[in-house]
Amino acid sequence: MDQAKVLVDTIVAGLQEKKGKNIVTVDLTQFSGAICRYMVICEGNTPSQVSALADSAWEFARREMNEKPLSTEGYQMAQWIGMDYGTVLVHLFVPELRSFYNLDTLWEDAQLTHIPDMD
Image (tube, rainbow, N blue to C red; front, side, top):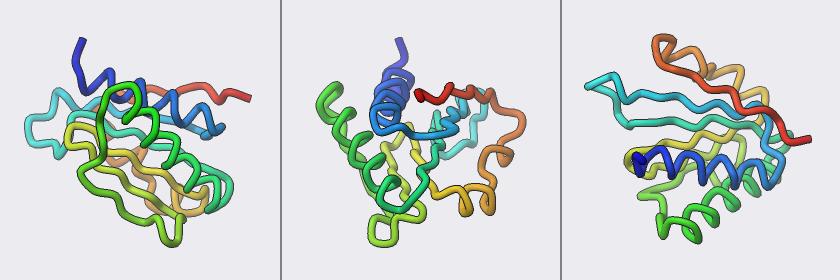
C-alpha cells in the first residue's frame, strides 16, 4: 500500500482519538502539480481541542510509522494548525476559520473522502 495513504489513515486515527470533527481527506495523487499527495482537513471546537488534535496526530504518526512533520505552524494561537509531512498536509481548524478558508472546495476535482464523526 502507498506509504502516504497509510500515513493519512494513521493521522486520521489520531484525530478520531481526540474526537476531531468533519474530517475530510483529499486525494491529490492524480494532479501532477499538486504540492502534496494527500491533505487531511479537520476541526476542533476550541483552540485547546485543535492543539490536542495536532498532538494526537503527531503522536500516532511517530509511534505507528516513525514519521514526524517536516514543519508545523499555528500552535501558538491554535485557531489553525498546519502540519507538513511532505506527502501529506494536515490542516486543523476551529470551525470559523475552516469555513472562512474553505479548503474543502479548493480542490473540487480531487477525490474527497468524508470520515464519519466518532461520537
